[in-house]
Length: 270
Image 1 (cartoon, one colour):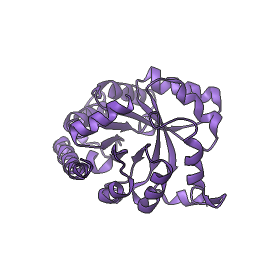
Image 2: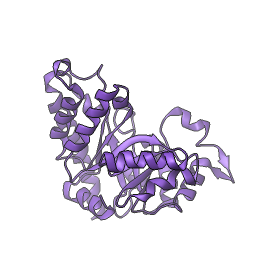
Image 3: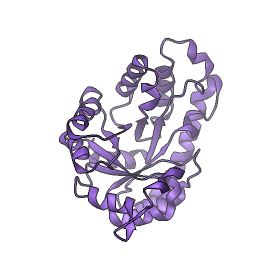
């Protein structure tokens, strides 16, 4: 999906919501566990319930890989089921030497038709550049994450600035605002504003709203640009809003709640 197509979907749906598809078999409603592919059936119901309110889906590949071959099949079925007008992010956090990264790119841009993949940039340019070899796809680079361990490295001072800022400045030279996004945690308010100065036109993928306690209003105020420039992810708050047979209705209500708030903020850009 191109940048202009993504922006068009944001304005069409009045939403910049990304739904994280992180199916946990210990949390999936028990009645689904009797089915042949409970993970896909869960995802299918979530997608059907939320596709009207979101512009992107983000399957976290770890939840599928942990299930072996069956999990990979569930992931493939899920990606193929997502509507074509939705942006698909493979949350795989890959990154390795060049030929390995190229194989990862093939896996998620060719074998599985995703629009984007999350990548850890800390091995440097030659580990990231292979992901740019596919047209109309995106590299989503980890910049400043919301976990407490991010302080171990990302907040260190390098050249009189934080390491995460140095990473963003360097990464901007690898791609452009039509093929590069940055992951910025929703709990990082003021840092989002600082990163927006470094990358004024790039999209930010922002996890941490919902179960992790990030403020959607704060994210928008600090991080939005004239073309929105945000995809805000919510996973657990939507997936597990309700248990039992009404889980999809619960997901729909939560997605609508977030989308309604987003629509209100989007009015400010018009």
